[in-house]
Length: 244
Image 1 (cartoon, helix red, strand yellow):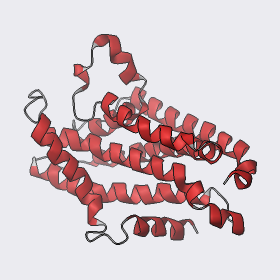
Image 2: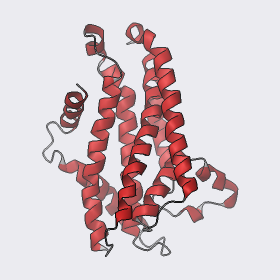
Image 3: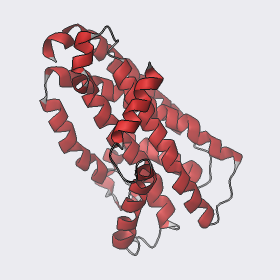
Image 4: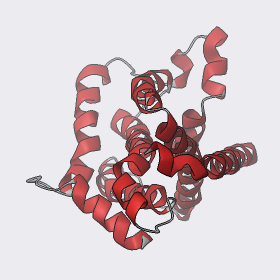
């Protein structure tokens, strides 16, 4: 059931689109072109700025689109949940699987760009897999909580869509972290998005293995997010039918 619903979500996302699945590849590249036009000369201290920017854009796109789709999945499928004995968790999880599919598809242009700039593949690149899985767990827990609250309060969806641009600008995606003033550096340190993007860049941009502390942090954030989000979803689930 999860596989069928996830594949349906992928197909519906690009239904009636001329380019279809190619938007998965083109979307981060279009953002990259904009960043190159605006910021390519602004940060001369960054080597291979396209790789730096795209490594953040890929994770940001995964976070923003997947969290939004998971948050609205219960409302969008309320008619099915009212009429059929389908576990509500099926729809959020299927949206996560669809998001992971899009993420791995977007790795294709990223791999081409890495090769173009002369980066040689290494076995340490496989560390991207546990980083992505941790990030997916963090998004799942956070989005489960948002989805459950959104059933009761539709303002949650509107608020989240308003907050996403703010998260984009306070996260060092298109600019280096050292541009953030010291008095505001704590915002970066407590920003979960930065922790995951930084781990991803450590592997594929810097060609290094993340420090043990980094692994502890991203695992802990994923675990806490799943536990808290899953608990909130379980507590609020009995009232879903009455509030759809």
